[in-house]
Structures are given as structure tokens and as C-alpha cells.
Length: 119
Image 1 (cartoon, rainbow, N blue to C red):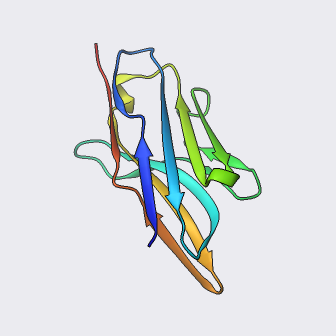
Image 2 (cartoon, one colour):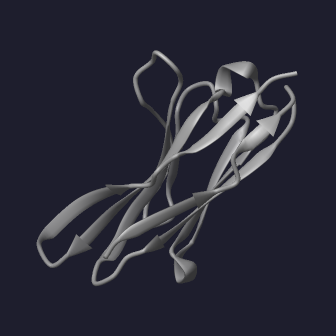
């Protein structure tokens, strides 16, 4: 049974920081890439950052100077350090993991964690 467990969301003032964590219970699968998406009210879900199994990271425009994605492979955990947060960053943040078992490749999603940036 594959599960993604997110934590670290909450309410923060503009300019503040939060660190999101996502741990994957991967079962029989191996983990390829991991990443974070977000969805604000009334908007489509959008990519925030991804981290490949080879160590490369990519970011959406507008967050690359403020957010940092990192990964702890031994713990199957991905983090998103968010600094200089803005009200526009308010959204539900979703962790995603691309998993492989043999020739089967599947994307799994977490349940989401709310991030609210407000004074």
C-alpha cells in the first residue's frame, strides 16, 4: 500500500517561512522523481518544484528564488523550504511521487496540506 504523508502547512505572515515535508511509504515500488504542486481557490493545480532521483531540481517561475526542494532518499522524504512567502502563495500544497515497479510507472499524490499567507 503506497501512502504519501504530508506535514508542515499552516498560517504564516507575509515574509515568513514554512517547511513542508512528505514521506512516502513506497511498498514494493522504487521512487523516481518527487515534487510539489499547489492549488489555490478557483485555480488549476500548478507545479511548484520537482526533484529527480538523480539530484536535479526544477522550479516554477516565481518561486525559484524563494523556495528550495530537497530530498532524503534513505527516508523516502521530500521537503519544500518556502521563504519570503507572499499572499499569492496561499494554496493547498500537494506532494507527488513517481514510482516504478518493473515496467510499471505510476504517479501517487498526497492528501494536501494548507498553506495560508496572511497578516
